[in-house]
Image (cartoon, rainbow, N blue to C red; front, side, top):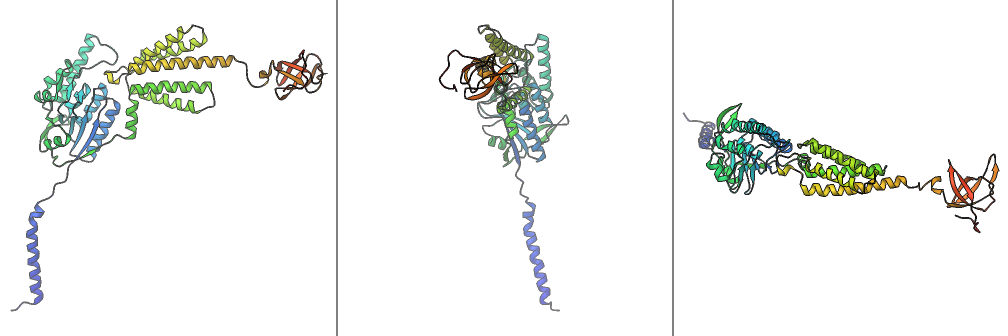
Length: 454
């Protein structure tokens, strides 16, 4: 029985589709991999609340976007212990692996930076970098032996709590806390403090692809393999707010804002109505107070600053031949030098900045105060008080009205009502001796000019 042309066509079409399906099986079996994303943040400053906030934002972004990892390029001299604990907690709680990389050559992860490096899922360093020197420093002065031991034990226990679980050498890491020992990149790798040495971030990512790392989830250590082949690195730049707060966290800038704002406010009090100096000065002082609130402050330094203000005011009140001013400037200098109780030199106010600013502030303040007092003591330059002692001429006879002679005079180009103790004829030269409300008191002069005095 012969098949119809339509039936043959359907069979041929089915056979062709079957062949195409068989040919596409290898292609369907091969699924191209999705390019992994690695977010990157750079911390190249002291460790303080601003840097802690930046790291937390970066970790939140990496977790939200399901990134393959977060790369933290670190170069820090250290910083505040409270901020360090906050950053370590954020790293340990991250769902995304965190890679801390001390880079480029010449960088360091000192003091607080060592705690961050050891907390990372992957600790890496570039050749020519160093880490360690993590002995805790008390922010309120020199501790006694008992307090020193407590601080060391607390910091060492904090470091051991996660270094051991990361599978690193906790005993050697503890020496950075107790004896302030430092390590080069090669020494850190040999002592099992870090996991990798890489000259660049690209080589680091390539070396970590397929590597098994130890992660800490809910306090338990677990193993995870990194998939970073051909990863795309996306930099997370600081926001405008973070940049502004980063500048304000500099104690030298905070001091400049405080002193400059105080001078502008003082200028507003001496020249009321200008508005701009007072408004700008208030903003500067508020910014400085906000910035200093981010830093450890000594209360004794605040007392020195208040004493300096009192001494500078007394210099204007009493003639001390500059002794009170020198004492005030000295208190101001010591107050600013010790204002920030920094755990590391990079967070302290620089002596050159403090001394230069204090001398300039003291001189300007004394000069302004003297000018203000002198202006208050000077005779008024407007109104009837400014005419006392001036010569004028009567425009009409000053006749006796009621109990006193009253008339009009011309003095300094102005016409005023005047009274006298005795009648004065017209066009007579008179001198203003006083005033009552808006009426001048005059007396006749011995010499009479030929014309009106204006």
